[in-house]
Length: 96
Image 1 (cartoon, rainbow, N blue to C red):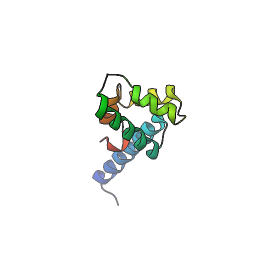
Image 2 (cartoon, rainbow, N blue to C red):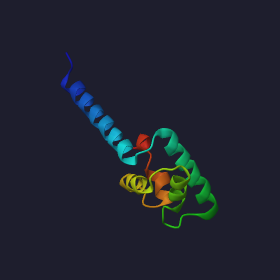
Image 3 (cartoon, helix red, strand yellow):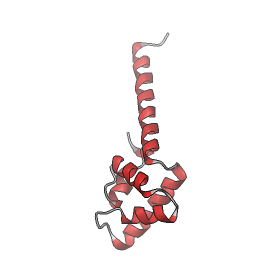
């Protein structure tokens, strides 16, 4: 029989898994596309720096036929209000 501690751990883990699924759903792109987006943004920020917009993210979305309005909302919901914040905050798998 599972202990109370094990039951709480199971509930906590299920909660975290549900939150991660929700974050991926809000983002609207899969792991492969997110990795490509992050690579694109990182490469461009290394050259131009952050201008406190999502211009590199938007350029990537346009070139990959990803609906910008949905992606923008997902990035912002994940803490990415500008390109440098996209790199720092958006990956659902990196959140605790």
